[in-house]
Image (cartoon, rainbow over all chains, first blue to last red; front, side, top):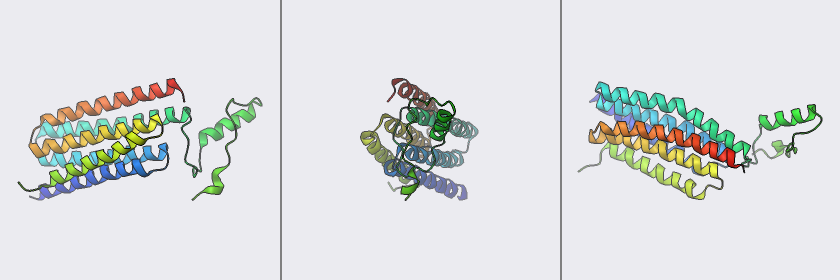
Length: 133
Length: 87
């Protein structure tokens, strides 16, 4: 009885996190913030759903499968997000106008200054600090 | 037949998938669409996981494992494609 309520609460929490992830993916202003909503919130939501299912089914094969799905997703989601974000940054997907920290560009500019030759595309971006909302 | 908690959770997941579809259709750049596809894959896994408990069919959990695996591999492949294609 109590376990039923616990698993129901886990399912509702997980579905809420998944819904929030989807809303974040639609509402966020640029790719990288969208990506943060999609990867973190959906992983947490899936984790909650898996806990609920493992409690509800309760036999050891199901729990083992649920644990392995959770471990797999939690190991691979950061890797996949990082790879996609890197590819997007390298192909110059525009950042949000309110972005305050772009360490890779700062690094490229500094190296461009040090080699006194300039990396090919190190055009200084307009400092965005003035337009933080 | 009354509405149960798994039904509510599955409805919320389907709603989330519908909202993610908006970004898949609208997304200005290709990585946006890839992110939306990734989220759709994760939502599918969640739907299968809840469905496994709702229908007491353990086989759905195996399908969820496979879909999670395919989602990861396809994400890496999309990222390689974006990076190689440039712009």
